[in-house]
Length: 275
Image 1 (cartoon, rainbow, N blue to C red):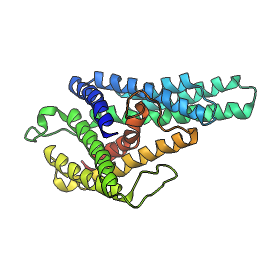
Image 2 (cartoon, helix red, strand yellow):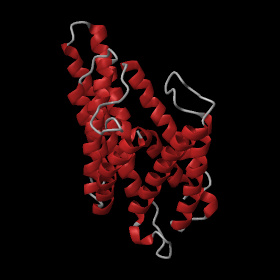
Image 3 (cartoon, helix red, strand yellow):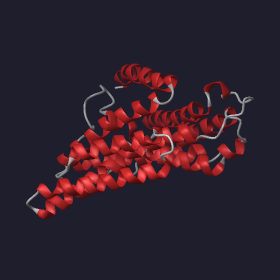
Image 4 (spheres, one colour):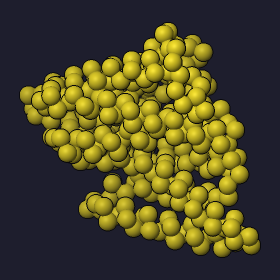
């Protein structure tokens, strides 16, 4: 299992590195493509769970939400317009169901799926709204947006890896086993501790007071774990182990970004408030 995960990382890491290096607007376009793939998998799972959906509308809405920050001057108004259009289009496409209860179900489920995966929009928002990194900071060479995104990326990855390894070695006390039988309290704590270290070091490298980074790691770690469990809820309802089999050892696109769906909004809010 570990060898398979390692082989898959050889595919995933270069993709992420390229997106980080090319910067904007290509970073946003890349995330939008990822959102489209993740949305397709999410609607596939919702169908397997027995829900009616209008997948094309939901996929387009999720991708549009991610692309919106790349539109100059769009701000929150642009996001509101996209959400409104998604609700309208999902409602109109629901007219085709002769069973009105199923039509209403399709309307609600389509909007939910689009908004759920559309949370990836907070990744380019973090890049665009990130506070300026001082020239004297260790991470100044990366540029402000890139540096803050890398901090979020490392925090989530370190938490995920730490929780997996610690849980595998000493995990004894399970929690929320109806969602994920392998999750342990030991793994959760171990991952949070490592994420906290990354947050502290990261804020120092970004030229911010170390004290302001104390809560970044724990909050992002808990949000990342919640995002993972939320997707597990969807997969269990669908009777599926993975969102797809696209990436050997890692499942599908949604399996790889589920943590960021919850972690990115928390990171953006924390950075905007604290810094």
